[in-house]
Length: 227
Image 1 (cartoon, one colour):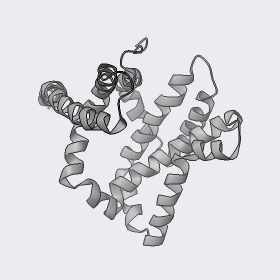
Image 2 (cartoon, one colour):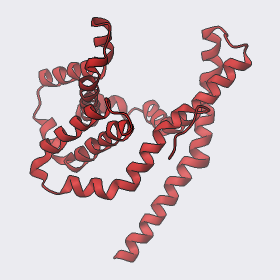
Image 3 (cartoon, rainbow, N blue to C red):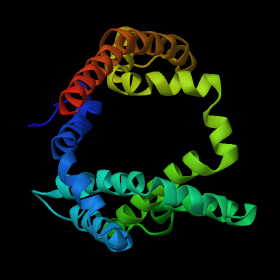
Image 4 (tube, rainbow, N blue to C red):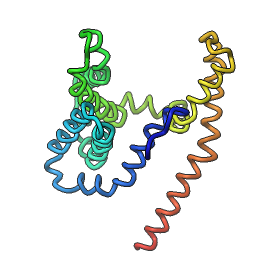
C-alpha cells in the first residue's frame, strides 16, 4: 500500500485496485441508494477527479478511486444503458466515437495547442475520465465494436491482458539491457513481444486463473451458507 517502487512500475495501479476491493461494499451502497441522483453522483466523481489531479497528498486517491466509482455506477445501470444504446442511430454512434477519441486524447491535443498544459490539467483529467466511460459504453453496446471485441484473437489477448500488464516491463527492460542497451527497434519487438506474451500466458494459468477459481469457490461457499 506504500507504493510499488521502481522495479516494476505497472504495479503502481495495484494500490488503488486493492483499496477499491476493500471499499467495494461502500461503492455498491452508494450506487444503489438514491438511483435517481445518478447524474449528480457521476458529476461529483468527475469533479473529484479534477480536484485530485491538482492536489498534493490526496492526489492519487482523489484522481483514481472516483474512476472506479464511475465504473460501478455504469454497472449498476447496465440494463438502462443497454436500452439507451438500442435507441441510438448510426449517426449518433459515430458522434459518440469521435467524442470518445477526442476526450481520451484531450491532454495531448492541448499540448499541441498551448505550451503549458498545467492550468488545464484538472479539466482535461476529468474529460479523459468521461472519455474512458464512453469507451466502455462503446465496447459494451455498439454492435460493430462488440463483434470486433468478441473475436477469438481479441478475447484471448483480453484473457491474458492483465497478466501481460503486470509482467511485461521487467522483460522489456531486461531484454534491452542484455542486448546492449540500445538494440535495433525491430529486433526488440521480435524478441520481447513473444517472450512477454509467453510469460503472461504462464502467469495467467499459474497465478491469475487459480486466484479467480479460488475466489469463486469461496463466494459459492458463502452463498450456500447464506442460503
